[in-house]
Length: 298
Image (cartoon, rainbow, N blue to C red; front, side, top):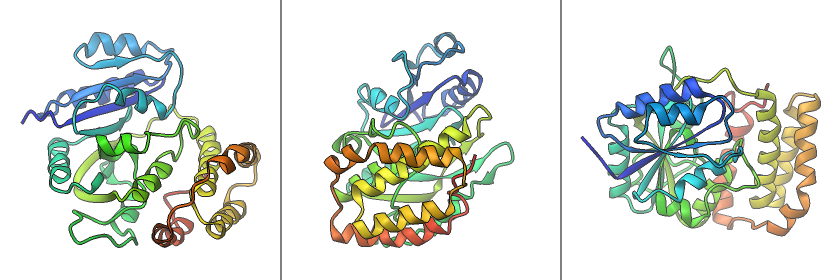
């Protein structure tokens, strides 16, 4: 079952044991994908452990935490037509990568496919799966599943050319909801994104995460993405919704403060989406406002 069409890219920071578990799962896949690991400045011996236990995998050590841009660094070394993103606490199920490649082979206008996510150790579906499965966006009949307005990097196989066509993940956003801006830019170029039920990713959420920092960046990046691409009306509505619904604490205040501090560059780089894409994104606004899986907590 060896399949060279897809390279797996993993980013990590100070999660050595979880990363080694993930790499062990990837190494055991019958399709034997090439794996690239970007160690974002870990200080817990991650690089040494990867070199010792998985010498056949390409290890990149930029020496600092690049966040999601660590994927951009890895993409410079990807020569396969497709790339499967992975976090250090998630891994692909056997057979999912070849099936994703088959779908991308068959549909040249398809930029990415996002898999069903099972949360370990119990194997329950992640709450976000229901929203992906019932996406309100209408897509062409040829799509292999519901059309999406965004994607989850740790559960997505993407066309390498599509990734490069939008310049990869934005260094401005660093990490936390960084996929939304890329998804909008892909759609603006005419690409489609889809959820595919038959693909599976396993996720064992790490306990080594700063949920407060993740919330700060999530609020900031949501606002930046909205102001960069959406219509003024949609941007104001989403901003007002966040003001009303995020926790009233220092973390939320920091998120809004960082967003406001970036306003000068946001204004300079703003590029509103075409009206037809704006109408498609409006369909997602209601789902996002009432989502139980996309809450700013921590």
